Amino acid sequence: MSIDWLLTQLADSFSGSLRVAEPMSKHTTWRIGGPADLLAIPANERDLLSLFSYCQEIGLPWQIIGRGSNLLVKDGGIRGVVIKIDRSLGKITWLPNGLYAQAGISFMSLAQKSVEHGFTGLEWACGIPGNLGGAVIMNAGAYKAQLSDYVTKIDILEYTGCKKEVMASDIDFSYRKSNLVGKPLAILGVSLQLKPGNFVEGREKMRQLCAIRRDKQPLEYPSAGSVFKNPPNDFAGRLIEAAGCKGLTVGGAQVSTKHANFIVNIGHAQANDVITLMAMVQDRVEKMSGIVLEPEVHVIGE
Image (cartoon, rainbow, N blue to C red; front, side, top):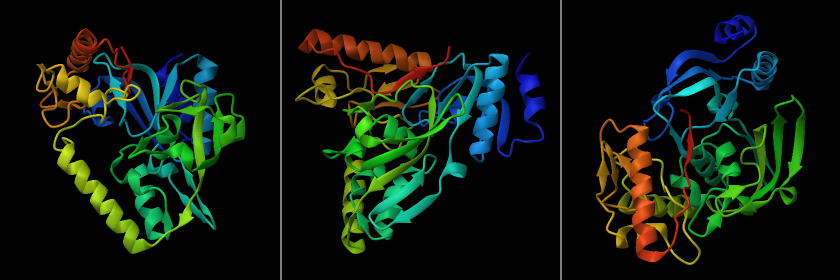
């Protein structure tokens, strides 16, 4: 059985979008990646359940992505099904002490809407790409704040089809990761506890933080944000710059001359260009400082 069989089974019941041989370069912020055998964008939880059920029935591999902001897809693409959680699963429910949001909402949009609704706490997220589900799994953070500071509980859908509510206290959050990474589940929604705030002050804080990002980060080029995690008591960008890597180029990939912890796509970069460049940076930094930089981006595909 194959992709064709899966398409036949989903034909009358799937409400979302199904795209065969879809270039993943269209679905990553690096604008890099070979084709997925099938890209499925569910419109609701029922679509998710159908995908899990049919893929398991025929033994077809699948993986879940968000907005591709922390992702490098290899040039050979991805075999099986890529399930993309996006704005169709992105509703917000406002609560007296915060909100409940579905996983597909843009994290930046959520930050902005929370300020508009009279809450404070997420202003730091104004420039972080990706959706809420990915931000939770990777415990996104900036300016000494992190998402786990606000999470109270998470709704998940296990690949078996079982829906569960998980309390934040039962999740092992740490710097830029959680124990949800690699687990056979999809994030459905997240409850966040926030404090009452002033709209004018919140909007101004977001404006200032976005200005800082524009000044310090190479937002004019496709990238995946920070490529390496900051080692304890230091900054990856500082180490990379000290190792003389700024401007280092392989094919269409370049270590940004503006922020050394960004690798940017300066024109038709391939995944292999980025992988080679990452290895060169790690080697130079280790030789200079003895520190082995740990990637923050995830590499998938073949």
